[in-house]
Length: 261
Image 1 (cartoon, rainbow, N blue to C red):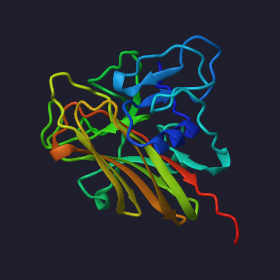
Image 2: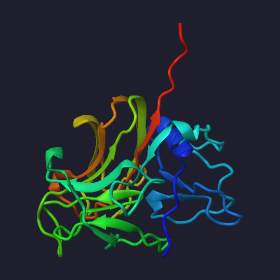
Image 3: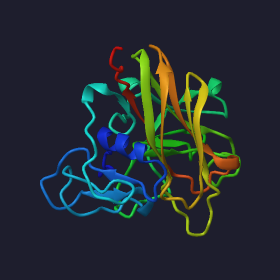
């Protein structure tokens, strides 16, 4: 069973710094021997690129170059590299809510992404819900469930929620990418809303159109305590979940203190 390529933490930080860009890139986190693997595009459905992975990529914005390195010790959490089919591993939980975080509950079933196959024919493991078929969270993103839905799903609002619980106290940078993966040519998707909460307070929100495979990067600074929650929430825009499979990643990096004055 094939898996989607990982986006390294260093690349994520470099991408998030770039801001809104025309295409979301996925790069392998580990060098491969040679040949394929280089860079793939979420907006193109995961089609493999060519070249040697792990050396350099073309960052969002167009000019080739090597992204700046990030010290591993500063990386507290990485939604792509940390993804697991074990709840609460590395501090991550995978669940849903009914429109507000106080209704958060864990997803209970392990499955694979259904009703969408990328051009690469990768099979994407995911967390899913028995009662609302389209509520799914996988390594690169999620799919929520809405009141406007399709069989065999139940018509119920379930936002897909990826939650991280902090073991660190201090300032952090939270960064990532949001883009549509399922680009329905018939205009079946009305888009999605991506929201990031810190300790229940909304800190970032964006709308991604139904055909927006380029998406955008985000980045902001937050103060965490031990036990703080960071929630990455995918909402079916206006509760319509048709063709809403989306890329939604997040990385949490410790902010280095400035020099003493």
